[in-house]
Length: 497
Image (tube, rainbow, N blue to C red; front, side, top):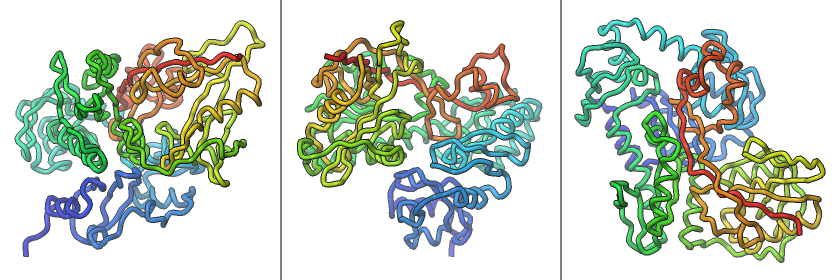
């Protein structure tokens, strides 16, 4: 009997569950556990191929992980990486940073469990590897490539340093392309651009397949705009376009500068097309929320209708608020001062949160200290319901029960138009903010807000590469992080009557 190959195994997986699962390690045999990621929820775990094909799926989604705690996270980490890391902090949730020690080098640093479990590496050792690679021979480089990918890739030019571009061939598909070897040699390094684009195309197809489950109109892929620009998905009858923005291929590393996404949105708007941008991590980890937003924008909501006038409002706990926002808001949990919940028959169906205006988002402290300025930070309905009038009801409650002079809020241009809930509820638009950026580690699919990587705190995060003479961007690139820009925000203001 022919021995099953990695390709054979992946084909079996695809036939059973499509792109729902992504195997991060190669198949060796039917019993040896390998790393797999459940793309729907983002959870990463190890499973034997035999058990997987027999029906064993994501333990998180199957309910086997009831209340994940520090001990469980330590167990996960040990199964994945042995004694390489020591957990020094207390686990709270996958997306909240925790103190970790890399036992190989002794560095203590903060990272999220999600990044660590999905392949994120110690920043100090990543930099040391880069330094070591600078002095390697062509023979040792070829050996390293073979150890990583066997005969899948071939160098087509003489080796001239890991930080210089070199021509390489992906033997599987025949594509020849240039790449910095440093980016290739990392364990989760950059691979064939054609195959990577095909993978992004598979995510585009998943979005199209989902839209087809309820929308019967024409759907066009790669619709051409002016100036040789294309929209990934276009619905001509609704004049709505959808862009799927893979993090790496839409980063500054790939020359997608500060205004790239904004300019494309403005170009679409100039021909009366509303353009939505879906970032890769949103589709991978917030898929149900993205699907709900698509349905809402396409006006195909099917949830049960609830009228806000039949609901009651009360303050909710931090835990209630964060749990609700993680399940129902594209940006997830927040740090807010006032947390208001709308309840229908004791069931939480809407949440609105407020905080004092934050300078980090561009607000300016008033010269008049008596002025009370709040920011409306989050608003979300349960994605399984249509809660009619919830925004106005909760906002009216806030206005009656809290002292304020002004409320400001921000609407993400990737998802919003400038005529929305705000303008119909008494807010007026003051201006459009400039595009904002996130960082993501080169081996992960998770964006992190730039506020966590300001230069004044990088010295603690990356002590081995920090220098006052280096820019924030230089330090982050050396630490293995890339930058990706959004389209900016619409900024709204509501003054007290």
